[in-house]
Amino acid sequence: MGSMVRGHRVFALVNFCFQRILGAVTQGSLMHYERLTLLMGLWCGGAMAQDCNALKGDEKATCNAVQQNNPRFCEDAKDPDKRLLCMAKVQPNSYTCEKIKAANLRGDCLQMIRKKQYDAIYPNPTPKPKKGEGMSGWGGT
Image 1 (cartoon, rainbow, N blue to C red):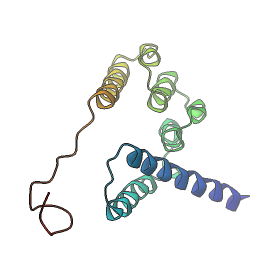
Image 2 (cartoon, rainbow, N blue to C red; image 1 turned 90 degrees about the vertical axis):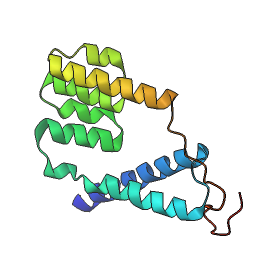
Image 3 (cartoon, rainbow, N blue to C red; image 1 turned 60 degrees about the vertical axis):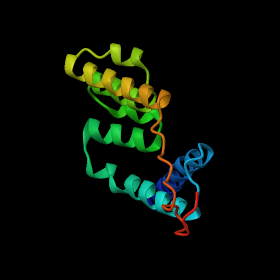
């Protein structure tokens, strides 16, 4: 049973990495194969860096929900405010944040939503290399 759960987590992690890379490719942010390899290492390594099993309680539930991108893990959070914050992290929605009673958590939640919306509207453009600074080392455009 343990190996089956571990296998499911590995599959979910690989799927998560694939989705991130696919998103980057479709947005045109990857121009060379080397970048693809580098980004896969960074994204997948970053996803593996946080071991949700090392956490406890509401933090573990939030970690699992964010890594799996699945709000059903938020149901494991005991504190209703942290459960709502968890749901907002997985499915960004300011209406969910407004339901949070604790002022500090509500403010953090709304700020997180605002940042995600801003990043979606105003993506950070990648600077174009100057003449002679191309990836090939040959100069040119």
